[in-house]
Length: 189
Image (cartoon, rainbow, N blue to C red; front, side, top):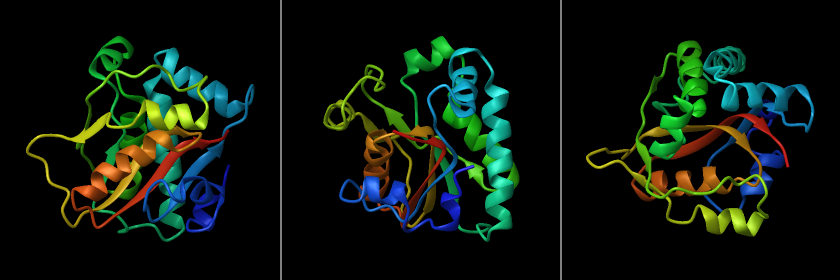
C-alpha cells in the first residue's frame, strides 16, 4: 500500500505534478513495481479481461479513504476516458471499473464527463516530455456536460509522469470545477 492518502497535499505524486496542473490532492492505493504484485494486478485488469479486479481495488481503497476522513469530500467521481476504439477492443474502461468500486464505498456517483478526442499510442515507452506532448489537447468535456462548482475526484489506473491525469484535470478546471483531486490504483515511475 502506498499511504499517499495520509499526506495528500505533500507527497511524491503532488511533487510530480506541481506546475502541470492546479489539483488539490494526489493519492494512489498501491506503489507500482515492475514484476511486483501491482504490475501483475494491473496487467490482469487491463489485458486479461478481469474488470472485477479494478472494481475490488476501488472498493477496498474507498473503504480505506472513508476510514481516513474522506467521506463527503467529493461530489462526483470522473474516470479518465479511453478512446472508443480502445474501449471497444478491451470491452471496458479499467479506470471506470476502479471508479465503480470507489463509488460503492464512498457513496459518490460516477460520471463519464470527459471524452478522448484523439487516439494516442501507449505511453509506456515514452519520456516525460513525450508523454506531455502525446496527451496535449486529447481530452475535452463532453458536449452538454457541466462541472461548474463541482468537487471532483479524477481517477485512473496508474500515474507515472502524471501527463494524462493533468491533461484531464486541466480540462475540468478550465470548465469551472471547484477543485480536482487525483486518485489512482497505482503510482510509479
